[in-house]
Image 1 (spheres, rainbow, N blue to C red):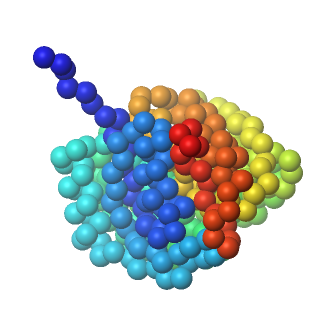
Image 2 (cartoon, rainbow, N blue to C red; image 1 turned 135 degrees about the vertical axis):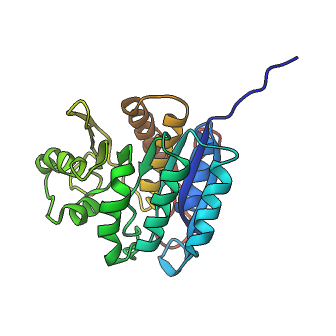
Length: 272
């Protein structure tokens, strides 16, 4: 008799992107492309495309909690990615759910605040809730520079500022921080990982690829890291694997034409 196989299980708690390039849709594609069984707890529904966000509808918090309970008490998860949460109420609901059903599961928190189009995806009054309720539960926080500036309430205009910023972000209560440098000017797109327990900085160099198809890059990177954690890799290995995946996805997607604005990366570049 053959022994039962087991999936590496990854759960995304995030918003839905009707255009398919970011949010839950990007997360599930990324989980699958990286060999994981993907699940979802949808927090909000957005009507959006490559040009921007038309509208946002936050789901009732009871429904978000029910989704988390249904998945985590039956299927379980080996790692969890958190994306768009939109409101303080949703943030507190997700934090409560993690405390109830996911105490020993690594959480990758991508503090989604602004879409590639510039549209707001997090209410102003939700930032304090994010800091107080959710960041302390994260195994790794993965902000880009504009998000880090909001969290730290200061400008971060140079690579030299990233090291101190990563450590200050970790001081908000999370275990580790991956600060993404894609918004800096220059020929490279380098990210910086701060390992809180070890008090060690690790730089992940990256090439800057000229393309309009960069919608969902943050969602995709954090989901690739989540998939690697779900498969048992440590955080440094997971970030390295995630960085390699997103770079290839951006490069492969750059030659496609889809929509009239910022198109998606190519999540299944290894397959077609």
